[in-house]
Length: 356
Ligand code: IPM
Ligand code: MG
Image (tube, rainbow, N blue to C red; front, top):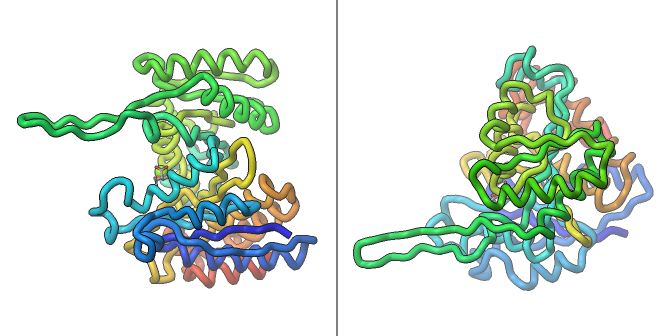
């Protein structure tokens, strides 16, 4: 039996998690699997009750689990809070405390959604399928010192971009291992023409490359990469990059697949539990309206089955069910271009469940 902690969070988080649980229960019946779901509070939902975005209790619940399924956090209600109290601290705290240093964001375009992509068909091609691996516990997000200083006539704010050899090495090894099992191409993205951290990044990647002679490695500057994603996204297999660059590039890349509402992610570390979350946010503007796309969260659960529980067949069943729902013309509002039928969040969950 696998203990799965659910952290629905804020905004559309609870709606998409509810649909995902539906799907996992359907999968449970078909495979020899049993899940025990435990729910915890995170983000604004936790602030409202405990005054903190991530409590020790939630952290302990997560530490004692086999995997964590995270919805989304944040919203205008909590925007005015000081930085330690912001809902985003929940996800940042979990990543850091659980040592989840590698974030896998697969960019996969379902054929049925080709019209929902903002790019022309000739550019997007027939089978867009690449993976962004984002370093998740270092760089600007966590580097110290950071702060804001006010003196009589000056205000100065600062963040520190910092990486150690070891931090770069572990995520790089994971990226080479992953590339080896895919098409064997790795693009390391940096800004080595300007940043010291990027120069170290590039030299570590080159060191590790010696252990993977069968993986084709190239280096690309981040500004060029943001352009190449639009010009010729088909050139990529695995992209490896640091935390902030990965945050930005993955939002950009996500819409190539139709909508950010389609994109799952897995955050892996040196030891379990791992964490799974859609890459989109809490979308407060559509929360509670049945408009959210649950597919990113559902596909995150598929990644959980693969990476935490090693049941690839069950993961494939979920992906196939999503594919069928899309192929048969069912769409949530975000991917509704050319739709036969626009469905609500829970209708989409029901349809995918039926195809399971
Ligand atoms: C993401 C999000 C988070 C990040 C926020 C919510 C802190 O944008 O997962 O990409 O910046 O990492
Ligand atoms: Mg982001």
